[in-house]
Image (cartoon, rainbow, N blue to C red; front, side, top):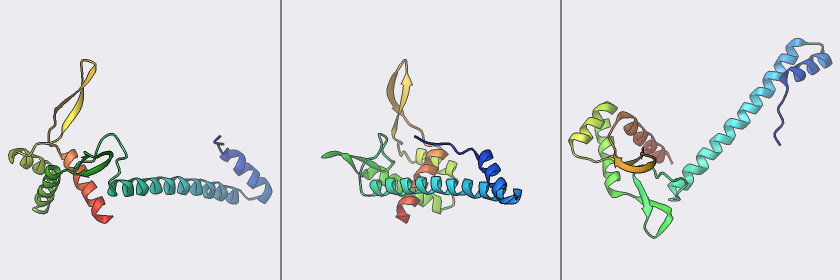
Length: 151
């Protein structure tokens, strides 16, 4: 059971003990900062652990990251998708040429590269439709590839 801290009561108690409003304000800010640090560290540890699982090939979500596909022998694992890996290399090459994210998306379309199929809700059921290259997709591909390079 999670307890909420009443910062007003905490501040009042510290002011009564120390006879100093400044000390009371400082104590409240210190407790708040410590709580924020704890939450941030927990989020960071979770992010690192999940990335390590993905890098080791373990599937951790329903949607597979771009560049990966299900291992035909073990659906709990991922293996590189050769076609998508080729697209990722092309995206990096275009980015290194100085093209904007939108121009990269246009180039991929012009060069005939096909994005993944995407799930859409149609008349109450989910269907797969052709995806489109767009700057947000290009950004996420680059961001993920950059993160993988760091690890």
